[in-house]
Length: 166
Image (cartoon, rainbow, N blue to C red; front, side, top):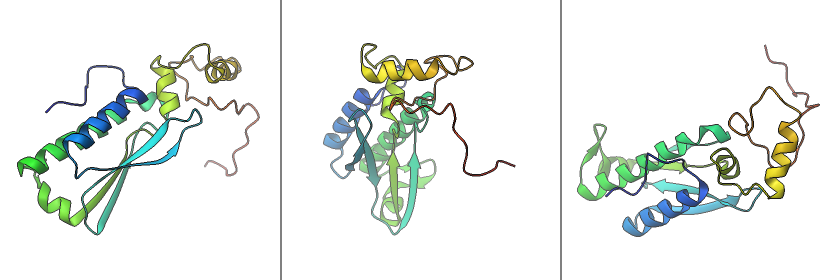
C-alpha cells in the first residue's frame, strides 16, 4: 500500500487524510488528537505498539521542517505494513517491537506554519496578514520561505532570552 506521498509539498489537510486512511487500513493504529493549533487545526499523536519501553518522535516543529512530517508518516506506513505482513523493518522484527515498545509520533507539531510556508494558508486570512506584518520587521528572513512562522501575531522584536547562550 502506498498512502503517504513523498513527491508533493505536505500540508495539514494531507496529513489528516493520510492519518484517516492509515487508521482505516490498520485498525491497530492508535490515533489521538492531543490539541489544536492557533488556527484550530488538530495536532495528532500516533501510538504504535503496546510495550513498556517508550519512545517519542516529533516533526515540523518549525515551519520549514515540513519534510520531517513526511518522513515520520512514511515510517508509520512502513511500520504498519510490516506488522500486518509479519516482516522486519530496518532489521527489527516488528511484532516483537510492537510488544516491547510503545512508539509515540507527533508528525506535525506546527500545522499552521507548515501550511504557511507551503502555500496552503489563505493569503486573505488574519493569520497570514499577522505573519506578513511580523516578517516586515525582520527583513533578513525571507517570507514565507525562510519564516519560522508565528501566526499568532506575537512580535518577538524586543524578545530577551531568559538564559544566556554560551
